Length: 110
Ligand SMILES: CC(=O)Nc1cc[nH]c(=O)n1
Image 1 (cartoon, rainbow, N blue to C red):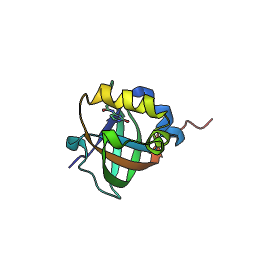
Image 2 (image 1 turned 120 degrees about the horizontal axis):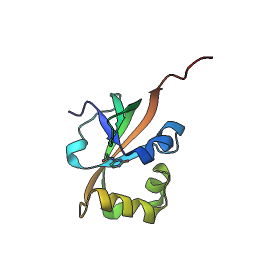
Image 3 (image 1 turned 60 degrees about the vertical axis):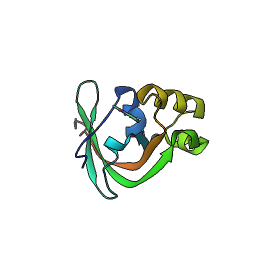
Image 4 (image 1 turned 135 degrees about the vertical axis):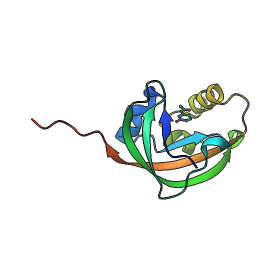
């Protein structure tokens, strides 16, 4: 079972703003369940930046990606296809993890 998840730094602001509400992962990173709280760190520096709550996990084929998936990733569909192909070259079976942000780093109080 996955107990933490990482995202590339370039996705951090989209996640924190709520613009990105899904992530497409391979089978190895699909072992999460609805209601699970996962700490989220950057892939590059392993820097924690929020916790997410998993809403659902749904299998989806690369060839079946739609504009709706792209909108949930805050991308265009061609952009999403390119990004996923770069991360998982040639992989057809993906898993959509839908999530919401439940905890972010504290903002300093003046
Ligand atoms: C680090 C990493 O694999 N990040 C990913 C992979 C797929 N989707 C995504 O949003 N982030």
